[in-house]
Length: 431
Image 1 (cartoon, rainbow, N blue to C red):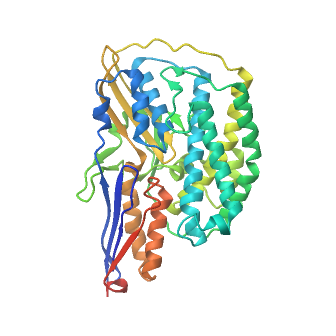
Image 2: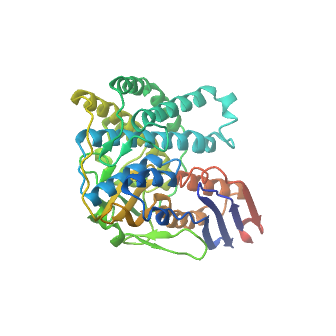
Image 3: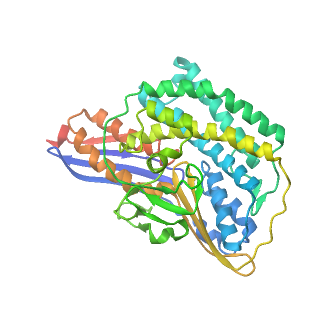
């Protein structure tokens, strides 16, 4: 059996999947990434520190807030700038808005069609109108959080080095809080929907890497941890993570202490299950997700649990900001030159930025390591472990299970949708 799933398109490139099995044994498994060079690290050289965050936000249209926030943190670390509690809280709220944006999009628009037996969400507009309306309501709320705090739903304009150039109004935050509370019935309906879905069975332990919990569930932090005992400063991520080329990909794969590893929602839940909000822990238990879950298909369930966490914690964050009162702030003066690194838990996993600045505040060198690239080796390892368990199934079912596994990682918005052309060579099982 030879399976080629072509055009697993990514936002910044394309991916193909090649599976070759003969007489029930897997001969080859390749996740071919065809990623065009985009030269962002080169574009940043010579740029003033005020220009860096708006540029790196364009690396991704889905995670533009995460790129902005980690960029600002790396620059502030390099130039000796400390930010206030108000700024930290608003940045966390903005990050929650983006996680909600991305997770709701993936859950409803990319994954639900698999479990309801349709090719996309479009047929559900007629047959499951309330489901689609609910998805759009939740997505609109997430967009409006980013709009209120970041100035736009994507590619934020108000976060800047040292704080914010403009603050949300108290009325806007109060309105968001009211809508977050009103969204709870939508979340309950979403949890009921997922509780009825048969998550495919597949267990493969790997190394689960994320930022440490710190004073809450992992988001922005200084320490990297993993399920096999890794504990290292996030700024020294290059001593922990090795990126390397593979012959079948133009994107670099990554390995940590024991080879391929996972970042993202399931890794975060594995490493910080006890730091989830009370409601999120309850939902995790109801859906069978625990700190020991090793089924990569449960990345989808972990996303839903994080949606609940972000919504509940978002309400508390707004309360804290309003309780202390919003105050205009003057950004501290930078010092330099210097080198700084920072990490954030973006929707798909741990995202690293590191910069070196010269005495004039311009970048000498930059390094950006994105979550999708870190997960590529682990996705391929999962596929290699999964295929032998599926060879007794019809080819159509094999293809569906493989695509669902890729979608569970949500490696990129296009990668989770454009699995268009499937070609089988040879008979069932390659016999």
